Image (cartoon, rainbow, N blue to C red; front, side, top):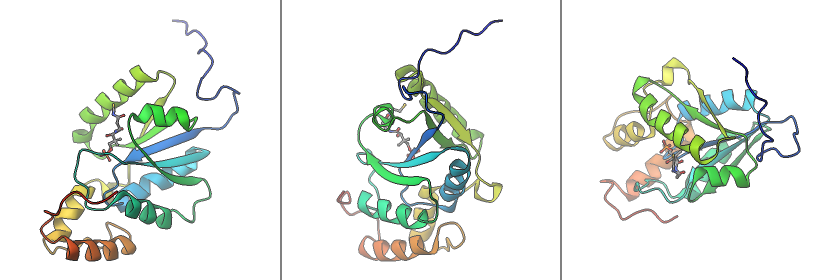
Amino acid sequence: MQFAPLPPDPYNPFDVNTVRAIYPGTFDPLTNGHLDLIARGSKIFDHLVIAILNNSEKQPLFPVRERVEMITEATREFGNISVSTFDGLLVEFARQQQAQALLRGIRAISDYEYEFQMALMNRRLAPQLETVFMMPAEKYSYVSSRLIREVFRLGGSVEGLVPPMVIQRLQARISIDPAGDLPRSPK
Ligand code: PNS
């Protein structure tokens, strides 16, 4: 079977040999699983843009401003990472950023179906944009932002699963919003 050469890449029109990738998500809050993936992504991509969804239908615990602050602080040492927010379609943000790839993490088979659907829909919307999946370290394979919020709220320890400054932010935020029933956090 023969493969035809790929058409010119609108995301990389000058054919520059660098790969800029977007790592999108809600990051409510950032976990060590996210950081593990960021470290892996920063090794294989020239530049990684961490993109926080701004208009999620979910009611976030942390306003987007605080999520930007946490991720910026936690990724300060990496030389090739930037943090941004986006609204609307991810592929449109990727086009604006001139990114060639999306990075997503797969922790377990249960992630696969959702990720597969998103990757194929994104491919339909933007055929030149590749989704790249990476696996975080096994020790983070069960860690999710949702579980972190729940365990912390119920008084369990999340030490070792999120950076220490995220624990401090959780303490501050949960003391404002103990039952998690405040109206949607301001952006
Ligand atoms: O951390 P999450 O909640 O799993 O991230 C999901 C996210 C932000 C990647 C996804 O909801 C998204 O891309 N939203 C932007 C809107 C969009 O492009 N939707 C179509 C996806 S196929």
